Image 1: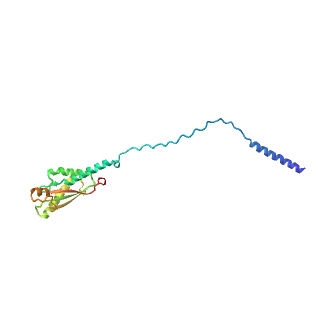
Image 2: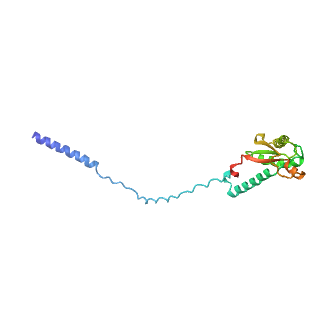
Image 3: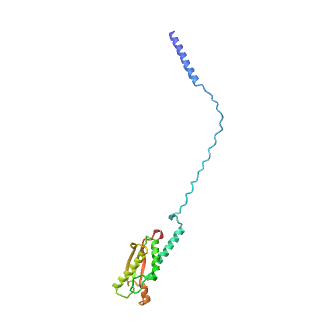
Length: 196
């Protein structure tokens, strides 16, 4: 009997546990109100980036503008090299009628500060070779000094004298000699890359 009492109490205990378990698992119904179906997501619209502000830079110059600038530079360069400064017989002072040519050359050199120039001094055939070399030097130097007085750095200008060695005109008369008494200007470096 003791055993049957124990079995009965174990059965009662087991029933209680099952009852507690069953009550805890009872399905509870919750009333919910019906919600409308969710809206479909809006289609993804890619926004275009705002246009960047247009800023004109030197590099944004059109090809037509570049060609125009190069052509203008080449014309100015040719004029610079082809316009000669002439001197009176046995003189190295700048003549008053030659100052405008040198003024134009100075403006060109100031517009393009990277340019380097060489000034050749020339003479006619009269006089000794040594005298004419010295006179040619004085002519190229007076041209350089004039450019420096207008603001061109002297360090950008080289001088050389050819005396009577390179005549522009081979005639031995006043017309030929007048063409040979000159200073010639050559660009020897510093041409901006965008002008080539």
